[in-house]
Image (cartoon, rainbow, N blue to C red; front, top):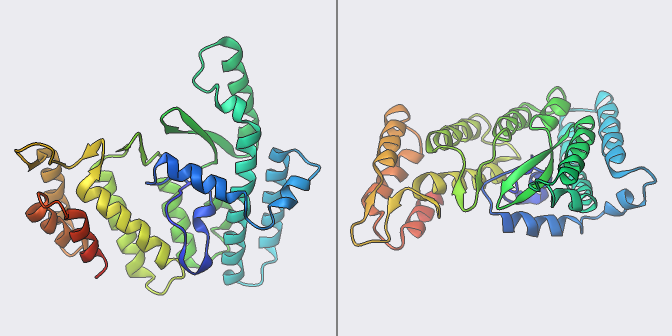
Length: 286
């Protein structure tokens, strides 16, 4: 699933994989527009195959390449290239099927039939509908699509990365300016990525992982517009009891986590209008 989490530093476009993340729907649409500019997309357009058939053909070709791949680093590079190309192709599929996607929530009989027929066809190609909120629906790969293809060929850091992503991709992260997952689940995600960065400090993936990790931390501490962690709009400002309880759970269970000091900072300074800047300053020290 599309995680339009951040662009990867040093030219790795892992966000090109269609995966769902903590970005807003408007961010998703902007990146989707940009994806049509990726060099090499013309090959997809010129194909005589249907777009869904092209998707499966590309997948099968990648699987064959992996069986004779020179080394794990080459498999990493193939994964990155394949993700980028898939983003372009999936964008084209969505554009072609936009009429059906627009009818996803339509209760009319014919509309529901069209949606079901396309859904059945998507499933044949390991694709599915994914609801992202505000009436928008995307076409995504199955959550573990990339993990299943590459897990036996890439380096351990890429394998663990793909596994973590496959688990996260099972559920939508945020929609309608609010978190969909619980704050506890978000706290667990933070720990998973802290463990990843500790285990693979020299991984090529670290720059992108760290940026996404910081976004997770910010959402965990401050929340999003429709799921804030504190009441700051009135004269009586306070952190919601359920968030205090979650912060206490986190610190007790993970006292050595780099996020623990940020929790203390937020508790002490959440009333400060510059709380976002204060948190970002501390994050930059991590």
